Length: 447
Figure 1 (spheres, helix red, strand yellow):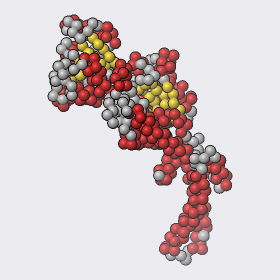
Figure 2 (cartoon, one colour):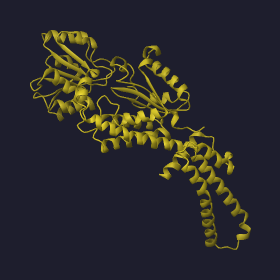
Figure 3 (spheres, rainbow, N blue to C red):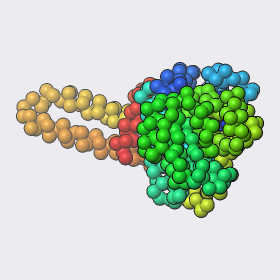
C-alpha cells in the first residue's frame, strides 16, 4: 500500500470554530514530552502525528492509512482524554483531509489562519510542536517532509509579501485594548501575571505606554525577577497576588496554569478593599486564568482573548492585500508538495527497475568470469565501469518516461506499463515504511 497526499488528516478547533469556553477544555498541557502524541499514534491506522496547541487552536496533524476511520477514532480519543461527551463538542471541530489538510498546515504556519494576521509567534509554536513530537518518534518521512515545506512556505510568505509588515501580536492587541478602554495608560499601575513568552511580549508593549514600573507575578519567582529586570519593573511571588491586585489598574494575565489563578471569592474581597475602584483585567491565557464570574463584580472590567477581535480587525489595514499574495504562494507550495506525494507512486518502481538491471548485469559478469581470468585488475575495473554505464543508459528511458508522466492523469497507467514490460511486480516491496523511506531518498536525490 502506498501512502499518498490523500492520507493527510487534520482534526482541530480554533478561535473561529469554538469559543474560549470550549477551547480551554481541549488543550494538551501534559504533552511537553510528546507522551500524549505517542499515545495517539497507537490508535488504529495512525502512522504519524503532531499536536499543535496554542491559545487560539488545538490541532492534530496526522498521516493515516484511512482518514475517515482514523478521524472517528481520533474524535473519540480526544473526547475521552478531556472527559467530554462527543455530542457536546463535535460541532466545534473541523476536519481537513488530503489537499485541504496540506493547505491548512501551510496557511497556519504562514500565519494566514491566525486571529492576528501575520503575527510571528505561530511559526515558532508549530516548530516547537514538530521538534517535540519528532523527538518522541511520532513523525516519519511524510510529516517530516510536510512540516519542512510548511516552514519553507512560511519563510517565503514573510520575505516575499508584506503580510508581516507592521504585524501585531496577541500581546500587542491586549495592550491596545487597554488603551482603548482606559485612554492614556501613563499613570496607570500595570500588573502582569505570568513570565513566559507571551508575558514578555506584553511587558515589551506595556513598557512603551506606562510610566510606573510594571509589577510581575509568577509561580516561579526567579522567572518573575528575570523578566522584571528586563523592563525595570518589580517582581512578586504568587502568594502576594491578591495584595498586588489591590493597587493595580491594568492586569494582563497569561500563565500556563490549568486552573484559574484568580477566583471570584478572593477577587470580591479585593474589590471591597479597593472600594470598587475600577480595574481593567484581560485574560489571554488558555485555559483562562480568571474565573468568568469575576466580571460580575462592580468595578471589574474583564476581557478574554475572544474580546480582542475588534481591535485585531482595526489593525489589519493594508495587510489584507498582502495576504492575497501570500495565498498565491501557499497555492504554489501545495501543488509542489502534492506533486512530490504523487511521485511516491513511481519511486518504488524506479528502485525495482534499477535493482533488476543490476542483477542481470552482475549475473552476466559472474557467468563470464571464467573467460576473463586473463584480464588484470585495471581491465576488470574498466569492464565494471562500462557495463554499469550501459545499464544506466538503458534505465534512463523508462525512468524519464515515468517522471514526465507524474503531472498527467495517466501516471498510474504509465507506472503499470513499465512494471509489466520489465516484469517488475515481484520486485516492488510491500513494506510501506520501507517503500516511503526509499521513495523519499529517491526524491531527495532528484532535488
